[in-house]
Amino acid sequence: MTERPLPDDVRAALAPLERLHLEIARRMNREPLKGIWTWCQSAIGATWIALATGQLLRVEGMEHVRAAFPRGPLLFVANHRSYFDMFVVSSLLHRELPGRKRLYFPVVGQYYYQSFGGMALNQLLAFWSMYPPLFALPTHGASDRHALDVMVDLCQQGPGQILGIHPEGGRNLDPDPYSLMRGQPGTGKIIHAARPIVIPTFIAGLDNDVVSQVRRNWSGGEPIRIWFDAPVSLDHYLSLPAKGSTYKQITDSVMDRVRGLAERDRDRYAAGR
Image (tube, rainbow, N blue to C red; front, side):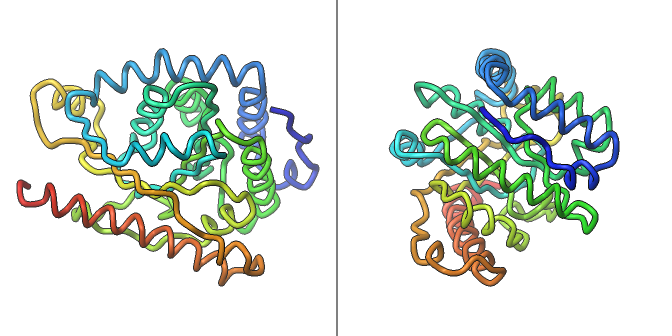
């Protein structure tokens, strides 16, 4: 991946540790290193995720993903309840989609780019795929605009480019697994600028404790469900001006589809809860 130099205003907006982590992540997400880390995701990451979830995993709608994959860059827009939501999705994509893939998961920068622990998680668990960071802070406007530029660049590289985001902006802690928080308009801004194929995704049944999840995978328990819907038709919204109200409409449209998947899961699984 060829990437423009980090602009001076972005460097100025970031604290020293944030800047260090971003510079490292940028290098790790360029070829040929990105190819090496992608192999690690597929050979190592997907293996441990399968050991932790494979016996309980139930997948619906994978045919939509297979059909969309050769056509262009994919953006998976998912609810967020477990730290491991996108890890499980990425493992599934590595197993099910043939050919060249490059996966990126834009994350909240405060969680993963402001500590050495976050840096270690990005390297050891995500193999540097938690990139680029979005801070959504008044002091980080230049950094977030640069992150949007990066995502647009990634999508412009065509089929095989895969991004995954959580429009709720953080983990939903409501005990009701079917509740959704309000989607942030930044998701719509990304979609409007980058023009990816948008795949609504709903995830349920994952634990937040690794040890508990592994034990449950082998002893039995609530199934882990991943639902994919057909790509969202957004042509009308993409023709509208690039402004806040447009971004909100795009986000709301995609979240409505995620909500529809949640209702399908409720109809099938909630009776047994």
